[in-house]
Image 1 (cartoon, one colour):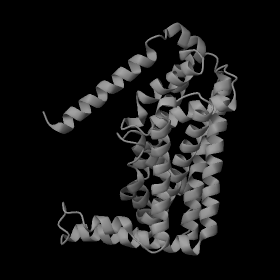
Image 2 (cartoon, rainbow, N blue to C red):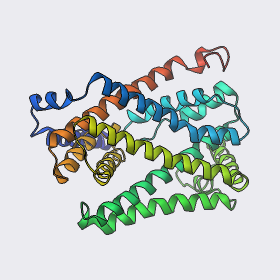
Image 3 (tube, rainbow, N blue to C red):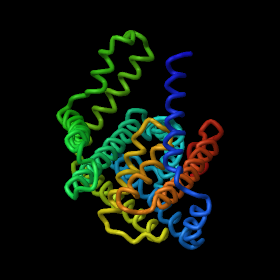
Length: 335
């Protein structure tokens, strides 16, 4: 049995264990009673809000693409990001995997040069990750300060969160002063034959993209600030959505508790499991129990999140097949 197969089996056993732990004290009758608290109207409201948030996710990328001198319709970018989400959601790992498709679709459907497409997607992802880890770091600090969780792991969690924020900021600063860390690192990896044409092309694409991001940061600081403000607004929207969903489930609680619950949900998506499977369910139950609420609320909330994200993920995969550039005569046929 190969090492890769052993790791895969171990991960799926972990998923089964986490789901069993989350559901061990939950009866079908109690789950049905809790789910029935969601009326058709409340479900429609939550899905409409999430659809609006998904559209909002593309605002930062659209701003960057326009600042790079490219004109791509907003809805087209929203479709590409949803396709990327569909791939990333069902791919093992911490919500990565669909970004190359975003680059490919910009190039194939709109004729945008590879280095420009790669620069726009990379900068959008860097700013997204910077916002995510900053939010998580601040959220964990607030939770620890309030004495709710992580008391024994305070130092480690703060170190990891601050380290990720520092690493991303350091990378942006390196690009700002004209350095190209990824291209430099790729060119010195001993595992690759650097004289291979395909590897040289990859390194050159990285070099061009990182150089373009650096120039962009130097020439467009206002756009970077605007994109960062959009990241903060997106997080406020996510927090509001969670708050409303919990109220629809009959849980009226404080903003601090909502922050704690959403922190556990976001941490689950950083695990090496497809869609945070198992980690989301266990994390929501653990958060609810630790806050003094019934575990059924954690199961219900995680089930709602799972169904919602799976539906949007499947929609993204469907769009990826329908809008495949190989089956179109012109890049703008379906815009």
